[in-house]
View 1 (cartoon, rainbow, N blue to C red):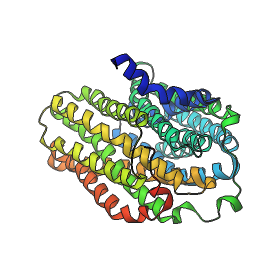
View 2: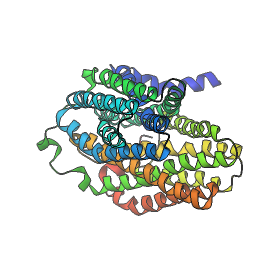
View 3: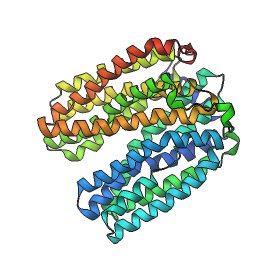
Length: 411
């Protein structure tokens, strides 16, 4: 079989997936919204730092928004499960646009700093397009585990693409037009993408009233909490890599290359997601999660030995290959470990774990870098990987006893 034939065969599952009626429409909408979402964090830092000349204030405002997003993600997901994606997304999109406008006006007018710390967290109360898109696939492909596996991989590819392109565009706009332009673009993309997403009405999952989904909150579901905790440690790897790579690049005299190096890490993860989704996998979801955490740690560990930017880039490219399969498996568990009426809430809980991990990894690695230097900072992501393995191993039996986690992946 020639290279062209092999490529066609590898992409065949994705082409079949996109043939699903209205799939292209809601995927495009979610991609546009995700691009906006990926831009917000760096855009608000560039905006505040550009206007107030304070990275400390910029980081504080960004952190305040991240905390609000983490606090509200599960609650918003629960509302989506109860009232439907369209009925929750539209008012929240309007809410977000209003607070985004308040934040931009406050920035441009030199309003008191507290207005920034109020407006950005309020704007961060949003419906997550990536979680809702995954929920649509779970609904459309119910009883088709092989196609759902491919769909979750495709979703991860879109996530990686968003975080490669979005931040770069935000920084370019903020540094070449006005400090607020990157944030304005993010707001427009998120709002327009959300509208396009919910316009695909036929693929929206049905509403599950409380008596169908169960009154018991997902946060009392032990297996879901285990997955969320593993995501905390996975997020620790991601957050630490961002901060330490920036510091490592600066120490080696090429701070401007940090974004490119991190983009390589994301590209490695995206490529792995494509391959992972095109291949039929053996074993259970619990086994896949354990193997994923082992791979993350083993492939990240060589970073402790690097002493130049070329070696760092190569290690991160390879390490990125283990991130996507772990995230894909975690999101599949978030869907299968709960009732149909709790899918969005469950993914919100798991996503919250990831956000907490990113924030904690960034903070801890920053403290290590400041005290012992950039190279020492890489002990934080490697340590997070070790912790993820330990937790996944300890939780293996618990997940194996859960029927959904023990389900065999398609062979």
